[in-house]
Image (cartoon, rainbow, N blue to C red; front, side, top):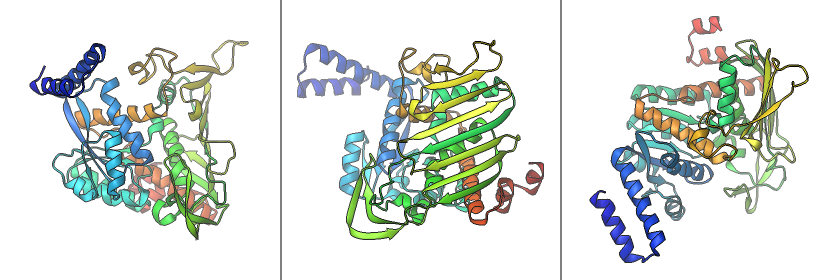
Length: 439
């Protein structure tokens, strides 16, 4: 045991006398932590932001070495936020070693290797570009940016700097979704014909729910499309393939709201009697044609009473179908045409077996995992990328392609026309004209 670990144990024993059983447990915990840090390369994380997503990311970073044995391990080095009292309290509660009140100061620190951006959408581009220029690896919450042009500049910055980059689409990392991907790649469903996906919520149907930043275009860039639509777009690209064209529509049901904010569990906080204009969509729906010929139907809304987080998809192929529902995220429903008559039907697979991606790191079969584990699995992929020198998917390239689909849906809703994703990427100088011709 290292001298530092021994000193920690001796200090704790002198300061806090414990029952023998608990003293032994503490010694084992400290010894294990010391051994892990002694044999693994630390990845010192600086996180910008600390509220809802900050909580999810902090928890995941802390739990990675508990469940997964990798050559690198994350260290919660520092967190940044504008409100000193708030960020200090968050640092203490979530286990960060220090805090900053200036995100630029955080990026400038020599003891930071990875910048984790969990702030509102209008800050992503500037923070990521500054971090890339400082040589920091980057994890950024979704959507990547306010616009396709911003996302392009972010991708150019990380490529120029040669840093590892990733965007946080955590639902890819549910074991059931990973297993769905495996079944599709193995050809178990055959040629894919259809995908239907929704993300339905109801938390701001009350006309008196405040005008939070997600309902202000200057901060969010879009409404439910950027918040919820980007998730199902990413799942569609991950599972079925690239989207060729879209036709969309959008609607804003409530045009004005009282000014205010919300808590991390979506509870409203009203700031007086002032009201403001809602300039983003409350709901959106769009049709899509994939490059492989499959058809897609997508819907996102916060006006679907009774749906707290209805992130669901169904994919139909020539040999079978699959269904997944985030509110029951451990289960994957599978139909296979090769089953004999009389036994055919959707079977429910509880994706907690060692054969299911990521599941073997947690509990015995049948012992389910939760929402937070999707973030842990994503962080595991990120740590693997940092250790081995590659940017795991979904990375900023995925973020740009997702942003292109979002922008195409908005343009389609405004013009009433089908919009081509490759042509939109070409016009933004992200794809070459030859690539467009071949798509």
